[in-house]
Length: 287
Image (cartoon, rainbow, N blue to C red):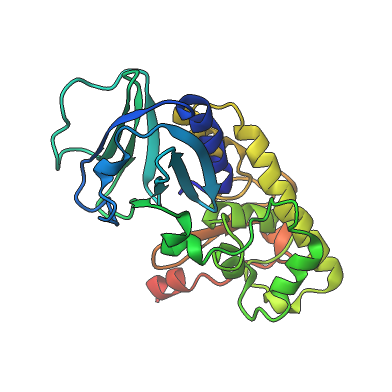
């Protein structure tokens, strides 16, 4: 799933390639992709792009007509830039293509989604806050006003484990499964540690890991073409998706805890005092 650093890089990329250009065709291809119907998607056509912004993991393309094309790429979605779009309309129901946007120059971009779980979402709205997911977003962790005091206040009464708290978009916007693993590894904390139990020193360490991990990932992605961002993300991850590999910090084996629809990765030596965490799903399979 694209998270804050990748969506930030896509925002920069689209700003460079879209700003000042006119959209001549906006074509939903997958039935499931469009989540709003008023204004209609055709109302975007003829509009000139004035800005591209990020809200958490949401992309927001604003036009001079006052309308916004907002997209959430979900788990398996991606954006592909085309220097020249194919001639002729795409055939619905074939392949991963979900939406195509054509510019007056013949260039454009396509949104695609792999797999059968169609969660990629596109909205046409007059105000981004009309999108439910944006309306309930928590603060952006890279915003200038997101200081340590504000972070500590968010965690003070949070009774959940750190892994779940970091992924909650209404608490902190933009962090998903991959970067929550990376942040906790950098902070040397167990994903199962309760957020409200942190000492001031631990809160400081987690805050520094949060901001530092995301800022490094954004910088690493800056200037990378849209089509290469996925591979760039993978190369920068130290524990997420690296089950069985050596931890780059201590050399211990990276371990995994599986859930019904996701998994987390961590280093026992760096994060849990050398003790492996219980993998309940694996334990049930072995019984």
